[in-house]
Image 1: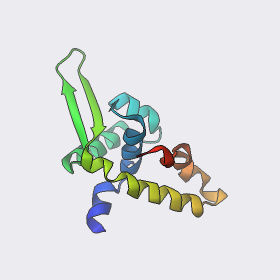
Image 2: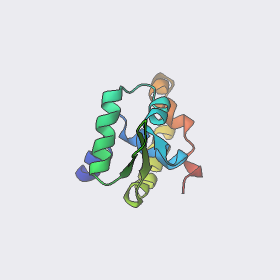
Image 3: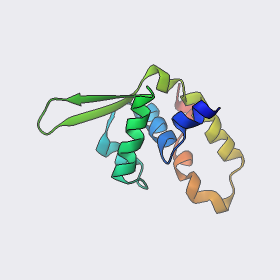
Amino acid sequence: MEVTLKMIGGKCKPLILYILAEEGTLRFGELMANIRTVSQKTLTNQLRELEADGLILRKAYAEVPPRVEYSLTEKGLSVVPILQSICRWAGAYHREENENTLMQCQKCDYRSLH
């Protein structure tokens, strides 16, 4: 459990993983637009950690302007069922006073993920 929480725990790691599972390959700006409450620095750090743990792939293109895309690896895809369980649990124990913290989860429809 400790290893799993180290890899997927963090300010926005679960959201990054979910969004990439739902949307597919995305650029940094697209991730920022989907996670409005995160700073650029935090998102950058979380992406680096996810890449170092082998959960996401970062592909940089030698273009001007530079283009970088992020996608899930097979290892990252294997985390999706865990995220589905977390979302179901949150939905089962949702209280109106926690509504703001669950906005992203409610936006997600994990049933559509494979």
